[in-house]
Length: 112
Image (cartoon, rainbow, N blue to C red; front, top):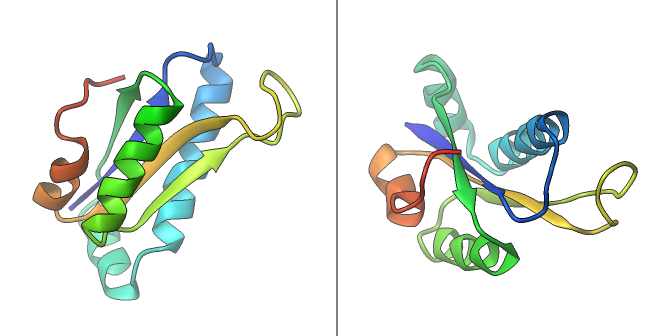
């Protein structure tokens, strides 16, 4: 099992902002996951991968694919307290779920 977190590359997030947005996405999607899958993923070491998205449209397209596959997912919008305008879409997490299911949604993306 794994979780893929897709972060936008087009909005100039600093390293700390990126780390925070990835963490928000991971936790939010985890909370959308059934108890059995959560326990399995935690037992397997909580594998994660962070991937690149070129823009907001790509994030929404991937989220729709995750929804169509029945996968837990979460889109993150920034609160706007620091670097970004309020409501800026920053990241998407898909899973945790079986590797092959997550790859159906995110398998074509590059590592961040």
